[in-house]
Amino acid sequence: MAKIVKIFCVISIIALLNLPHSRAQEKAADEKGQAPGMFEIVQDAKKTIIFIGTVEGKDKVTFYATGFLVQVQGYYHLLTAKHVIADRNTGKLKDEDMYAFFNLKDGRVAARKIKELKKVSNADWIFHEDAQVDIAILPFPIDLQTDDVKFVPENLFTSPDKISELYDVFFLSYQPAGEFKTKISPIFRVGAISSINDDKTFYVDAFAFPGNSGSPVFLKPSPIRFYKGGITMGKDFLGGTFIGIIGEYIPYQEVAVSAQTGRPRVMFEENTGLSKVWSVDYIKQILDSDSFKEQLNRIKKMTSPKKTSPW
Image (cartoon, rainbow, N blue to C red; front, side, top):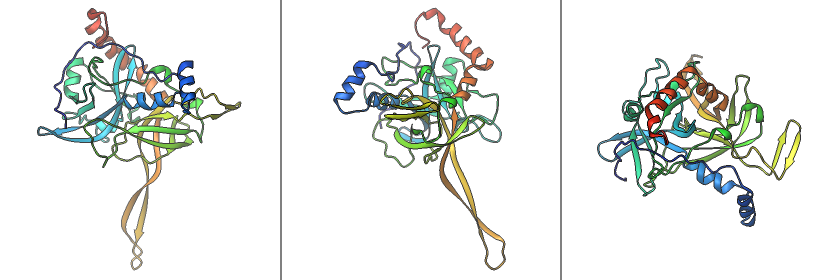
């Protein structure tokens, strides 16, 4: 594996994720027989992904979760599932030895210790006020001169009131048992929205496994899109937009009963093939919380004399 990159904090150049499609992009895609903007969505979305894991010894790396980058008021942040970095029962952080992995423009892989990132930013994870919401967000210094990353901009956030069951989706993540090929290369998983819940979470008919937690979920572009008011063809204003974050798969349990005694002998737990998604409304609520705003203001004061970008 590429040599682990030492933690560092530098000034970055703010860049926009090129997911919105221009007419020129649509024309070029049409000439190639591609769906408008699909190539851009694929390539750019991949660069938002961060693998989360640990380092043992010099080069032994273990991945076990996914995160992704967003930008809030010009400052990069890492989002992942809360249970990745905090104990479900006690809420105690377990990120002491965790690293964030992503690609560098020179072909190497950066490994930045989360503990050091928190120290550099004088910041910590921010959670939703409801402890059950499985989302965590942390400021994340980036150097766009060297780091080969992009972010999901806030203008691509689509609330659950704009989506519907049967809409096709895709998400990107680290996949356990996947081969590590000297770079961070997330896989795409696809499915459809199967149920939108009253609490603004929803289920997707798509398998998620340990390692997929924290993956960003997008609406898959479609030439036909149905809305409450009818159907549109040829124009898809929702395709490629960001709709939520994978929490966990939905399990079911089956009990094996002894034919002789009639008592339960063993319990099997299986993956239903449904995955729970926390909608962007929950992310927005965290971004609007006092704790998040206070932390962001502290970072702004710490970095404002540079008069450029935050890191």
